[in-house]
Length: 220
Image (cartoon, one colour):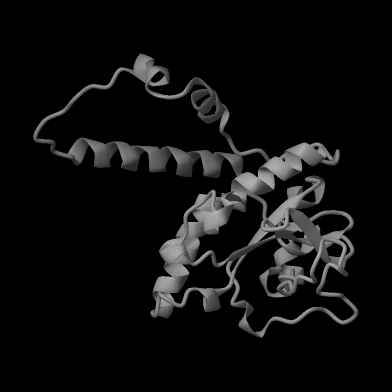
């Protein structure tokens, strides 16, 4: 999700500093209320899908894809050997890609601290701290994103510079960020919030939206 945090403010009663626990007070952006999804009664209604109708649509889509492939005309072709996939990649990376899939069922157990730390660092941490450069790239080095972690306790802002999570709002708000029920089952959900005011080198509003979406992909 993207959100212009220019007019953001902290919820009433929420402190926006670390109270000196981690050194100097750190001002944090507002909790991403604007990024939440408000469900209407109509949106909550279940939509019944006829399995045979869905299967028919899937088959039609596959036929169209096949026809499009057959229409392509190449000047030349080179057959690639699937057995060579693994040899061209690092073994760990290959195994990771081999296991990639979309899951909608999650254990409700809390994530171990080391796993959560590694997840956040690999998503948006600094790998060149002295240069202020992150693990992931961003358009014109805008670094326009903030990452909010939603769990049962509340909403937390990830501060990569100081390696900490700062709570910006109490309470379980996981049900507000998506209409999909599995968000409530997962112990942690991450919300990416783009602050367009940091993208000063990108003047066009449409370009900011486009590059922010691309940068969100790098983080994901």
